[in-house]
Amino acid sequence: MTSSESAVSQRALRVAASATLAITNQASALRAAGQPVIGFGAGEPDFPTPSYIVDAAREAVDDPTTHRYSPAAGLPPLRAAVAAATKRDSGFAVEPSQVVITNGGKQAVYLAFQSLLDPGDEVLLPAPYWVTYPEAIGMADGVMVPVATDDTDGFQVTVDQLEAATTDRTKALIFVSPSNPTGAVYGRERMGEIGRWAADRGIWVLTDEIYQHLVYAPGEFHSLPVVAPEIADRTIIVNGVAKTFAMTGWRVGWLIGPPDVSAAAIRLQSHISSNVANVSQRAALAAVEGPMDAVDDMRAAFDRRRHLMVNLLREVPGVECLEPGGAFYAFPNMKGLLGRDFGGRTAQTTMELAALLLDEINIAIVPGEAFGAPGYARLSFALSDAELEEGLTRLIDLTT
Image (cartoon, rainbow, N blue to C red):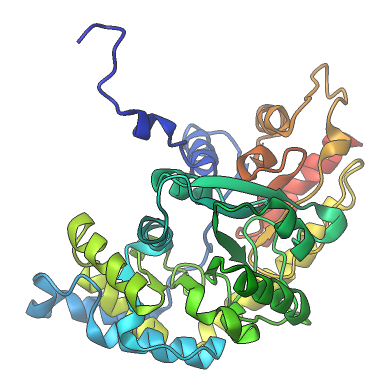
């Protein structure tokens, strides 16, 4: 091998690093070095995992049965509990055998596309989108077909847009409500139209319901295969405990699909990772079967911060911001800040703007380019009220 050659495969080289994790890590490193950085990049709740869940994990550590391999599809009690919770919370009835417990929601997305796509199959992906979707599609040799939305339509895709992007190679659609990064929440009417269109077209739908418990009044969560039962037998649901129960580090998600898709995902997982860590699965069981009081408190805090963030962003000259209906992100339009002079510096893109803001006022945002939406930025309100207000006050002061 010459010095100009690389041992790294082209497949691996095509995979981009997670922009959201990169921003969070960069902000953490600067804080550790003594810089007063306020990070708006976090894609996880800033609350501790509820104590009853941690207690269940402690008990599991002392149980010798957790020290051994368990079924690749997940612990049977957890699969049954997820099926019951899906019926309770989403109104969608599934069998425990359709549930595949995964190492977080990312692995659920990966397994779904590995199970569903053949090389060259196209996947419709409304933009803005979560950073992992394009990579998961590409790793399955699929082709991402972005379908652009913006703040003029509430970041919600229409059937006409989807139809215009469809070809004879279209295999699937990714549908997310509430959305990461925009916080958009679809109503029943629009959701039903999309589900029925997909059914008529014979297109599969991967619906990501990870933020289902983080919807703010007067909005309501709806599950696609319930609103449009015609698409139920071509729907794959991905979900998990990470966002609802502040369990991002426990790495427990799940995939729910038709029996043949779930069986394929189980076969893949048996060779990729075998079972998810048993202690984490036992903690997830306590979460799924337990009370929702801590979740209600967390949602109330996020709701308060949501209003605070939107109100402050609307005070920034040149910034426009819709009020997110779910999740814990705002996705403001930052185009009015591009090309402006800030102390002798200008930014022509939101990538450049993010770098400028980190350098000049020590705030970390995730530029819209990471989500397929240049000119916008994602700001998480999963941080304290004081940090949120301080960080956005710095932005107001810089721009006025």
